[in-house]
Image (cartoon, rainbow, N blue to C red; front, top):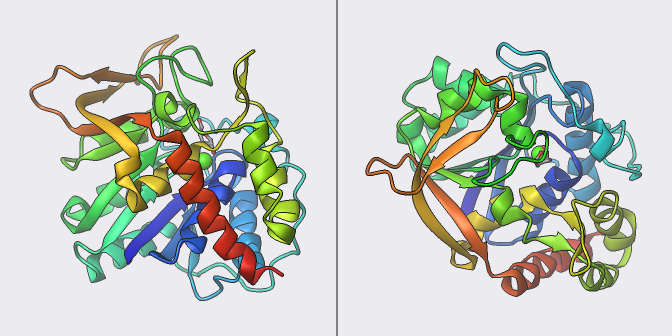
Amino acid sequence: MRKILLDCDPGLDDALALLLAHGDPEIELVAVTTVGGNVALPNTTRNALQLREYLGFTTVPVAAGAAVPLVRAAEDAAHVHGAEGLGNVVLPLPTLPASTQHAVDLIIGTLRSNPGQVHLVATGPLTNIALALQQEPRLPEWVASFVIMGGSFTRGNTTPAAEYNIFADPEAAAIVFDAGWQVVMVGLDLTLQAIATAPIVARMQNLGRLGEELVVPLSTFWNDVETAELTGQAVHDVCAVAYIARPGLFTSRPARVDIETTGTFTAGMTVVDFDSTSPNALVPVRLDVDGFWDYTLGAYAIAAEEIK
Ligand code: RIB
Ligand code: CA
């Protein structure tokens, strides 16, 4: 059983990542924390609460965190995720409240009380993680591993140089990558291999009510790739959770990753040096795509049994 704390900004693919963490019987989702990102914090938090009740993980605490980046103005991605953050998915409003704890305190408390047991996964801007490190520098000693969806060693998706999660708060990312732990950086070069193409969507349509009400609409609201060979939405954040449960699906290389925080055109760029003799990151570069979808859709099918 792998314990995961997921810090996220739901978000189409964050929602699909939460579903994977809930559906895989070998994963125990121990806590969810939210951050402002794709949409504003009240919406990312409401989305997490709605998903918690819709999917039924109501004993898992959900705590809200930072509404804005450390120093920059917030820039959302509502044009990708829709104004409410879950595309055209409409879920019942939550009846259970968020935790009264701040996300940073829940992150620190969960890791401190389970040293070496909990995998910390971040799929939004890294503001909460940076704040937690500033409050508790021992955090890297307590994680089982630390995996993010973010960055790229080629092109960005928000600017030519920067991927959204890093672009949204480069100063936070710089703190996170310099904290002395190994960051598993699941970036765009990997996640753009995990595309919900038409054949994959056809398989999602076999997930009954869960497929119809959640998985298909979350996976078909936006196209990250539109080429003759490949068209569809990338399930970026799902890859970060899948890495914890099925690391064998990923081929990874060590690298030194530095974050550009001052560039006029390059702010938020992850500068990746695969030749460094002092790596601070592990960068997945190749995905076993068939194995990824077999695993992910298998876990979704388990979750679908509960949503009859
Ligand atoms: O660039 C993709 C990332 O930005 C994903 O985490 C998506 O949810 C958005 O937050
Ligand atoms: Ca996200």
